Length: 163
Image: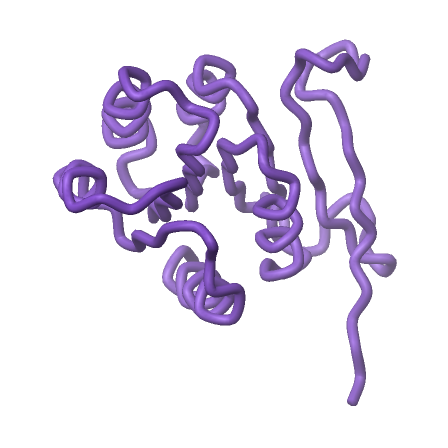
């Protein structure tokens, strides 16, 4: 079986290219054959709002080379990125997001990333959390611990639908 290898590359989301602990980071999946991602033209973008590195890693492993994955640990930092037209998928991990910020973030995603497919990962499942996420038209809802294989299947279906 032929396996593709991805190079994970962390870059600062700031225009100066400086990496700081407080800044958002971009996890760019670069193909060895096309490290700049220029072969397919404009690269599609996926926003991950999470502080859980295992969530980010799972998402990075599940997406093809044609995606740029932007990781945000602070929902406010994600706001400007959500305005970009290339954002096709948004993954929200609510574990490190204050309760009051969760509704605000879901609202921002719906206002600014109108056509993005949204996956919501709840730290702790409750009917109220799921109801709130679904009220904002989240296409995939799960809670931790995540079923890795199911999450990867959903990401693959999102990828196909987001063309």
